[in-house]
Image (cartoon, rainbow, N blue to C red; front, side, top):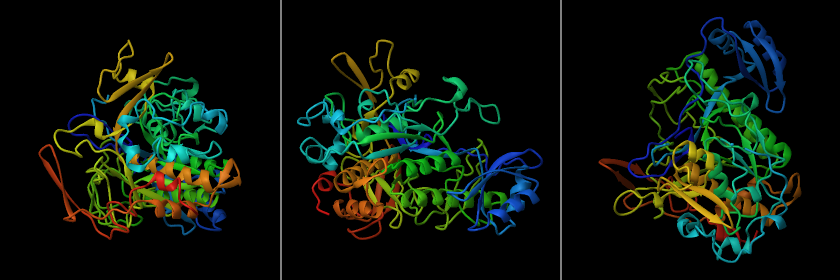
Length: 553
C-alpha cells in the first residue's frame, strides 16, 4: 500500500501499497546520537533512566500516560545495552515508522482544524432523496447506508466525534467541510523534504516550518477515509455512512504516506483526552510488516525495536479504549492468512534497500490490526466476495465491509467496483488527474458541481476503504445509545463492539473453502476457515448500517 491500506482504483493490476518507514535494522552503528522512545516496565521508570545513562544516553522527557521516556543515545550500541535491562520493555527510534493501507488504480499519479458544528447546522439539506453520485455508491447500498436506510432513521449526531488517524483531512473540501471540526483537529507530524540518504521523501514544504495546517492533506488517503465515514447530505456528490457526525483530523502520517510511531501514540492519547468516540486507523506501523519480539534472525536492536512497536502501540490503544474510544483498523492488503504467516520479505522497509527475507510465525504481529482491543476489518468487492488483496484469518478478522475489488465481477477489471469518496482538488491537480479547466483526465476521478461549487471524488480500493464503513456504523451506534460525556456523547467501546457484531450480517465461507482468485494471468488460493458465525474471510459478518440504525439495546 502506498503507505496506507488502500489502493487507487483503475484499470489493470493494482499494486498493494503498504510501504515502510523507519530505519530499523539500519540504525547508526557507532557514535551517532539519535532519539529513542524507551518504554519502561511497570514501576521501573527510575531503573530505566539508569539503564539509559549506563548506555551512554540521556533521558530527555517522560510520557507517564503511556510509560515511556524520550531519550538520546549512540545508535545500535545504545539499544543493545538497553536490551539487557529488565526495566526496559521496548525501544523504538523516534523517527518515521508506519505506513498506510490503499492501492492506486491509475497512473499514480492538506488538515484544517474545524470549528464545532452543531448537528442542526450540518443537515442544511433535507435527508430525503439521494445525493447526486449515490448511484455509484454500491458500497453504501451493500450495508444499508442510504436515503431509504440508515440515513433516514439514524444519520448520526454532531455530538459524536470521529477521529481520522491518517495522512490528513482536507477540511475545506465542500463535501467534508460541513462536518469538519477544525478547533479540535491536530497535526502531529512535521514534513521531511528528504530522507536521511538525501532522497525525496515528502517533497518541498508548502507551509512555514514544514508544518501543514490541521485541515490539509497532501496525499488524499485520509480525505477519502473521512468522506466515506461522514460526507454530509448536502445535495453535492456523495454521502458517508454517518452523514451527521463530526470529523476530527488526527494526522499521524507524512505527506509521503509514511508514519512515525510517536505521532500515532500522540494521536491516540489526544483522542482519548478530548473525548473522541471512534478512531479509524487505516495504516500499520513500520518498519516491520510483522513485529516479532524474539525472532532469532533479528539483532538485539531489531528485536527491541519490534517490542517497542508492540508495547508502545498497545499502551496507547489501551489508554484510548479506557477513555471511551472505539478502535477500528484496516486488516491489511498483503493477501495473507495472518494466522499462518511464514515469510516476511518486506521488513525492515526503511530506508530503501534494507529489506531482507526472514521466517516468521503467528507470534509475529501486524500492528495495530492484531493489537488487543482493535476491531480489524477485511475488504469485500461488490459481490460480497473477500477482495483478493485483503488479509484474513479466523482469529484476526472481526468484521468485513466494502473495500472494492476491480476484479470482483465478470469481464475486465472495472474501477466502478472500487470505492468512490472525496479527494483533495490540489492533490488531483498535482498528479495530473484533472486539467487546468478542472475537467477530470482519468476515469478514476469524478467531479460534481452545484450552485457554482464543484467537488472532486476518486475511486480507491483497499482495506483502508473498508475500515471507515465500520467506523461510520460504530458512530451511528454511539449517536443512538451514547450518554453525555467529554466531547459530546460517549459509549463504552465494549458495548459498541457488541452491537456492531450483533447487527452484522453473518456470511459463510465460500464453497469450496479454498477460493481461487484470478486476475490477469495470475491465480492465488485463499482458504477460509471457521463457521458462518465467525470465519477468516468475513469475521462475524458484513457490517450493516441499516440494522445498527434500528437495533434495540
